[in-house]
Amino acid sequence: MKKGLILGIGNILMGDEGIGPHLIEVLTKMGIPDGWDAEDGGTGGFTLLQYFENYDPIIMIDASLDENPDGTIRLVKPRFASDYPTSLSAHDIGLHDLVQSAQLLGYTPEIFLFAVSVSHFQEISDQLSEEIEAKIPELANKVLELIGKLEMGKLQMSSRS
Image (cartoon, rainbow, N blue to C red; front, top):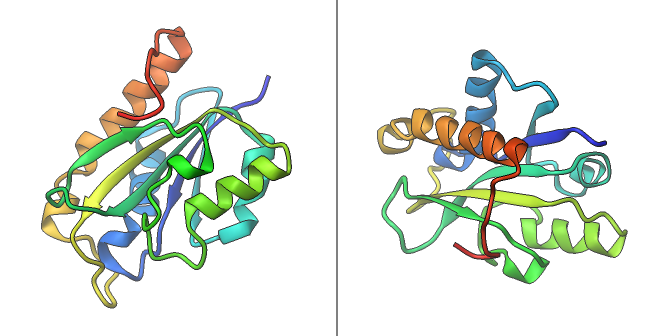
């Protein structure tokens, strides 16, 4: 049986866009549950494909440029690459492209995505804005709660929420 993975996506040099890696740092300090690993995926692009081959399930955390207020946390369970928002982040390749490539290679782990709404990406800053920083404890708790539900086999969720 494969281990689960918590994968933080984002560029820590672009302020709020780095929410994923910042959360991985916090979760690592809190302690990762047994049977799970946590990785800072940064802006790894196609180098992240190895995780789709080696882990199942995968919980991803990334910033989302959408119409929601800053700090809105949405849990999405995309079934297909087309289920990902097209402009989810400012990486070289988006999660849509990454997941589509993984599917073409036959890697099909169960994927959960915590998308954190941001209104814009700061130019150059390794700090999160106050609004997004304040959401870190809630986001960490939501990730750990999801892991608990997955391990208890009690998760009932449609592909979009």
